[in-house]
Length: 175
Picture 1 (cartoon, rainbow, N blue to C red):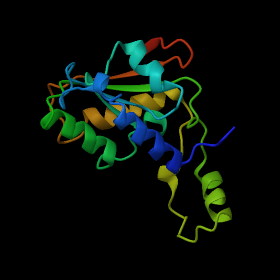
Picture 2: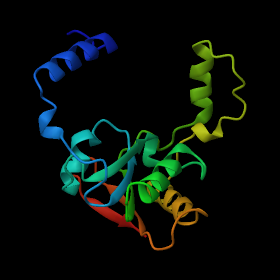
Picture 3: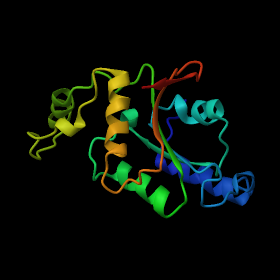
Picture 4: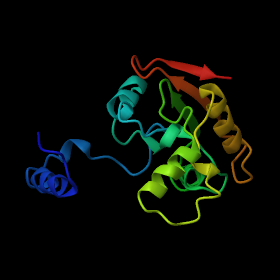
């Protein structure tokens, strides 16, 4: 089996465009359902998440990162949420964690060691932002709290947290 590479991906893309396979994905820039969703980058969610939520291409703003975690109120995830609201008309925000997440129990010192082993010489002392979480529900609650309490977040935008079963796609609201 040939391992995919960036070059293989570029070759596929050339064929994709030449055959106009992009046409079924035509969509507007704004989200038709007016929802921004922060979700994990886990590969198991690529197709499951939109299917389980009934979301098709162009219907929601999907913001993905490791663990669906908002770790900093001035970070790129919060920036994307604010842009979604103020520039793209989003009216609701969902934070969706999932079962069996790789960020659960992630330890910053383990990643620091792996970085060092690969020759990274940067100061690795203050890398706590690289850590994961101990409790799934608490992680979602923390992210919801950061969004709700952000000074630039409009009070009229609902922000709700959920946990998705990574096998069935079932959602459970986190209170």
